[in-house]
Amino acid sequence: MYSSYREVYDMEKIKILVVDDESRMRKLVKDFLEREGYQVLEAGDGLEAMEAFYAEKDIALIILDVMMPKMDGWQTCREIRQSSKVPIIMLTARGDERDELQGFDLGVDEYISKPFSPKILVARVNALLRRSNVLDADEHVEAGGIVVDKAAHQVQVDGKDVELSYKEFELLSYFLENQGIALSREKILNNVWNYDYFGDARTIDTHVKKLRSKLGEKGEYIKTIWGMGYKFEVN
Image: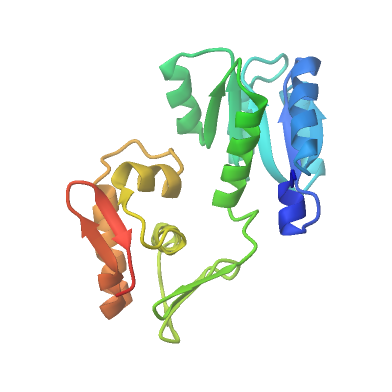
């Protein structure tokens, strides 16, 4: 039997803002998201989107079209990113790689070209909300004496607090959530850096080295998979 994420997680409705100047497109996206248990707000252009965003303080995700009157998707994204890290999925009829790079540079989390499958869009929404912890039922992750408290953004090793940078915290959380799974550097980069980093993937190696050091003996749980990436595994 079909179950929505709202039914699975028994939570209040999560608000998603859909911004597109085509009413048919908004209705299509809205219908599929509402079936999944989300509450959908609509805006027909960037100005309406900004009004809704500031009026509703608990919007969990924004689906944003690029080509719109009054204020386009790029400018809207830029405005939002000045004050919020809310996940943004950009919709566009264009397939130009330069557009995608511009979007990621502005802080877009996902990029979907029209036409698209509504089911795929919903799957991306679910995955992105999980990644941003909105759909995480358990705010505590524990393995081998390491405890990650996502809500408080704290880490303890054998009962003692460990100070981590923001990215070190995100990296450790990702490792613990994927215990026993070999993770490529590309996959780690995509999930922890959320596609917004265009430098050398070896930046991961630097963060892993620092993370291992801060975890002390527990650092050996982060194992190197030569030629690929890393795997978190408790001995």
